[in-house]
Image (spheres, one colour):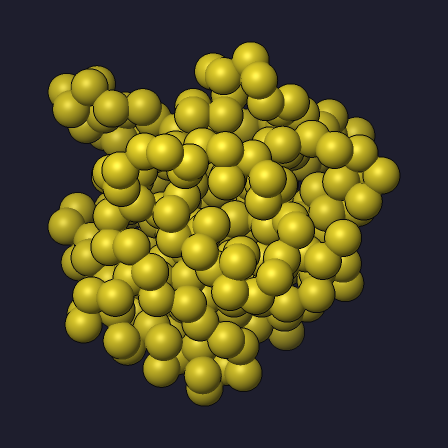
Length: 252
């Protein structure tokens, strides 16, 4: 099984413009995330997947500077983009990581890939982690089925296309580490208060000479729980936005 990590990112944010280019941990956020994803011990490659929109050229430049390939595809349909990138790099299995999630857990990405080396789930995630800490595993055959015989569309949110379809085997891996079972923690970037959360954590770890890695992040948040409150209200704001728009909250 040839696997890859797809960093799904675009430069089109409206709630917090320019968020994926903000400084974090001494680098641009996207560069920091690429560096972290390259630490995976189970994937065959990391690919930045973005659109053909000219605004996204800056992201391709970052990918090149960080030593990974990129793929530019459908401007709105993420699943078409993932399918076409999987074809281009001849991948059987992908873990999708959103560009909004700079603290995603690399060890859990590896766990998803490892699980699917011996199983044939179509959609896999790790349960009970902080929001933004899990990648989403997709089998290429499953993406091909979803994309087959339909026009391109806006798939900004796409997880329910697998979760609500009984033809797909969807697996949630249990989390054995009690300290990691914290779905109340928000680790995704949509608003300025989210960015304040990320910079607070990253600055502390950097100043302490600690790596910006998931175990160190969770240890810091356990010792300083007040940091979690910085962006606690952002999730309610995000949920109101999706209720008003009528869209699914599952965004990856």
